[in-house]
View 1 (tube, one colour):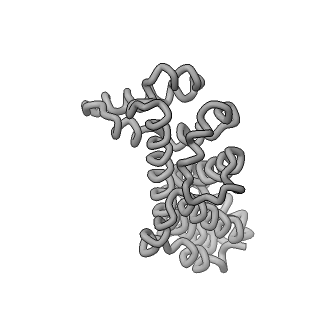
View 2 (tube, rainbow, N blue to C red):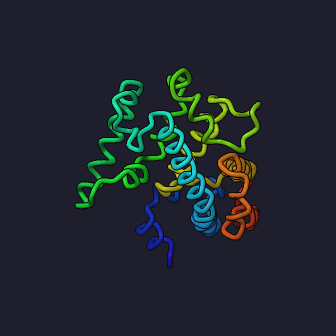
View 3 (cartoon, rainbow, N blue to C red):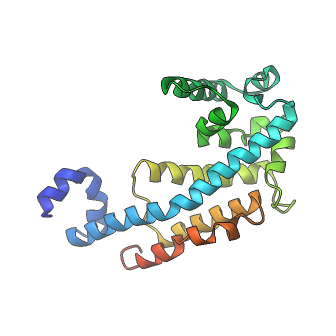
Length: 217
C-alpha cells in the first residue's frame, strides 16, 4: 500500500505519533504501528486470564460474604456501594436483555465491566468489603495483600487493557511494556498458584515485545 492509502485507511491523526516518534520516517512509523498491533494482541491471553480470574474470585468471596449467589442484587450490598456500581449492574442487566437472553448469575458476572471489579478495591470499601475480597488473592503474600496495593496494580492493568481494547498506542517504552507483563503475571499468580503454569503455552508477550526492540526505545 502507498502512503496515501495507508493514511486514508488508518488516518493521518492516528499515525502521526508514530511518524513523530521516528523523526518523519514513514516506513519505520508503519512498522511501529504494526508492532503495536502485535504487542497488543500478545497481551490478550494475560488480560483474559487475569480479568476472568479476578471477577470470578471476587464473585466467590462476595457470594460467601452475603450468603447469596446474586449478591449484586442483595439489599445489604446495594447499601454499601455507590451509584457507579449500581449503574454498572443495571448496564450489565440491560445488555443481556438487549440480546434477548435470559438473565442469570453467570451472565451478570461476565457482563460486568473490568472497571466494576476494580472499583470494589477502592478505599471506600476497605471497612466493609475488603475483609472478604482480600481472600480473592489466596496466593498473595500477606504482607502484600493490602487493598491499596491491589487497587494500584489492577487499576494500572485496567488502564492498559482499555488502551489495547480501544486500539490505542501502547508501545512507546520497552521497559514499561515488560513491567506491565510482570505486573500481570504477578496478579495472575496471586489469584491461583497454578494459573501461570497452566497458561504457559498461551503467553509469548515478552518474545513479541523484544522482537520490536529496534523500533521501541
